[in-house]
Every structure is written in C-alpha cells, then in structure tokens.
Length: 96
Image (tube, rainbow, N blue to C red; front, side, top):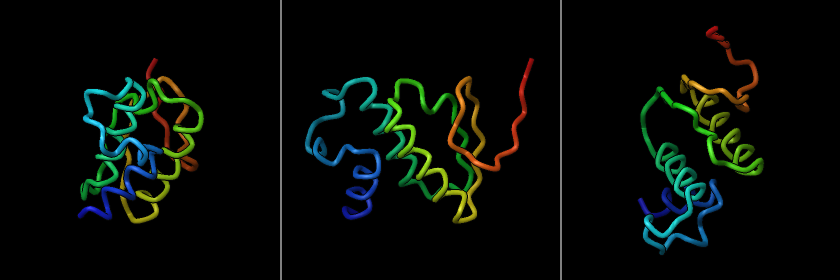
C-alpha cells in the first residue's frame, strides 16, 4: 500500500519528490525510481542489467542495502554489470 511505497521511495532517497510526475525526474532519479519499483516487487528473483548505471556513490550504497535485504529474506539476485556491485559473498561469472 501507500506505506510500502513511501518506504521504497525513502530507501532510494526520493521521498521529497514523491509528488512529482516521473517524467520530471533526472536520469539518475529515474534509475532510483526503477530500483524503488524493484523493491516493491514480490519477485523472489531479481534479474537486473547494469542497475547502478547513472547512480552516485550514495545511491549505490543505498542499493546495496536493498540487495542485502532481498538476499537476507531468501531472495536471489542475478545481475549483469561492468561495475562492482555491493553484493558481499556473491558468486561471480566473468565473461571474457
């Protein structure tokens, strides 16, 4: 419900912009909004491609908290990325 949406927006530091239409957000803010939507998903497996593209260091750190929460609840994260992700203990498959 509404409380879950508020928590998801707060988790990606978008709570102050909650009333703005998504089209008014910057590229980085839109990426954070997509991560908030992901956090609201009940999907047990998150399949994500370059999730930190366009994010600053603070946003990547907040995303790491989201990933840890999902994994801690039994969720699975499969990510394709060129940049390191805050996924301690994750298995890595490097493609040459």
